[in-house]
Amino acid sequence: MQTLRVDLGERSYPIYIGADLLARADLLAPHIAGRQVAIVTNETVAPLYLGALETALAGYAVTSIVLPDGEAFKNWETLQAIFDGLLGARHDRRTTVVALGGGVIGDMAGFAAACYQRGVNFIQVPTTLLSQVDSSVGGKTGINHPLGKNMVGAFYQPQAVLIDIASLVTLPARELSAGLAEVIKYGLICDEPFLGWLEENMLALRALDQAVLTTAVERSCVAKARVVGADERESGVRATLNLGHTFGHAIETHQGYGVWLHGEAVAAGTVMALEMSMRMGWITVAERDRGIRLFQAAGLPVVPPKDMTPEHFLEHMAVDKKVLDGQLRLVLLRCLGEAVVTSEYPREILNATLSADYAALVDQLKH
Ligand code: NAD
Ligand code: GLY
Image (cartoon, rainbow, N blue to C red; front, side):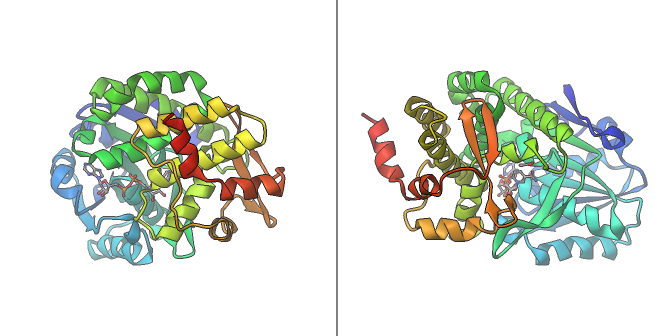
């Protein structure tokens, strides 16, 4: 097992990474303050992993709150169901909320922990690749609004993150690919050599090779922990973690939550960010195409939805959290391995990026 650390002064916490950690009561116990634990999970994950976690927590008064599954349920109604479960079982201020599931569960359970009785202990047990490499670390919690993705939420750090690599064996291939989008992101924004490693190991990753997955999760979490430690509240470098997300969130919101998976939208959105970085003269055509090929190798979509016009993108991007004083800031690549956040780009380049023919571009890559 490997232990990483998110360095945030007195709110620092460990990330445990290894196989079969779900049953490790010894890892959980130091992060549980009182006698009450509420496990928040969903209908898909509960039959797979809830029993093992309940067994590990047998010494506590455990309430299990099983929610409906899906991005479409990341909303007020489902959040209310978590509070119903907590209050119904008389959970007090020393209770610990444990999120068992993917990013949807982690974001909602974390937000519930931030709000319940003005804040209770919280532990992340992520079970998708995406949540293991990204959403469980860093304390962003929240829900969607019909008008914008993740628009209501709080920064609320967990006491610990327990990553059981073995839980990935049951993950559907499409969900694994979605997680790979965020893994590739780290290579693009801050770790160019990682791109080469991913090119060499993509087949093994998709075949669920545990050793290779462990390396990918560790390397991603090292990058995430470093960025969060430097800029917890996203006043600077943390925004680079949103490479492709401004375009991607527009796709998710426009298509309806859950139609495109978050990682799929991020992949197509990052292709748009690569295209724009190329049009800015910062990366070469060959570098853009290298990024596109890597997303393709990961089994991800690289062309935005056919029905989305530049106007649709602009409408949704206007409510992005990176809009400041009416100015849309975008995450772009100065070169592979270095991201910048900027509002200084010619409007024509953004328009050209939004109206580019990505299907034709990808078609050319075949020849
Ligand atoms: P998800 O939570 O919807 O999980 C994907 C699917 O896999 C679900 O059907 C889930 O039930 C199922 N599942 C989970 N673990 C499984 C397992 N081990 N075996 C089989 N099935 C399993 O999606 P996700 O990709 O994990 O997370 C996406 C969400 O994370 C989005 O809402 C996104 O906005 C959010 N996010 C948050 C942050 C952050 O910093 N907080 C970062 C990135 C993404
Ligand atoms: N996933 C983006 C962030 O944590 O900041």
